[in-house]
Image (tube, rainbow, N blue to C red):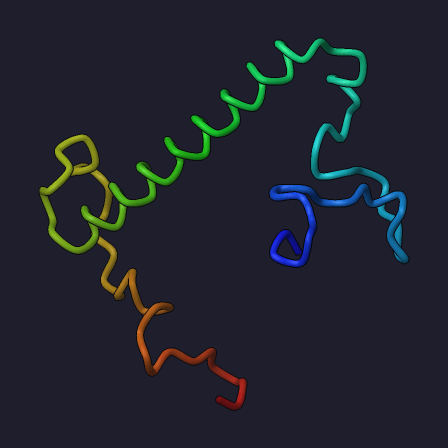
Length: 99
């Protein structure tokens, strides 16, 4: 953990873990293995921006589900009858599991 002297954002390769898996989280296909620092920084920026856009998209769907017509581009999607924020409620529990 970075609060205990570690490096922020660092996650060890899966190759060094107790239960190795075939692909790593970062660069699973080794596309950036011999890349320059500039290309790696550009890839990082693209990845961060992609994550930000995904979060904006999810919030758009949540807004449309809560207030129909709030996002005109999503007005042709069927209305969700449930509560999209239910997992964040204080009394949320999964059926079949003890709380």
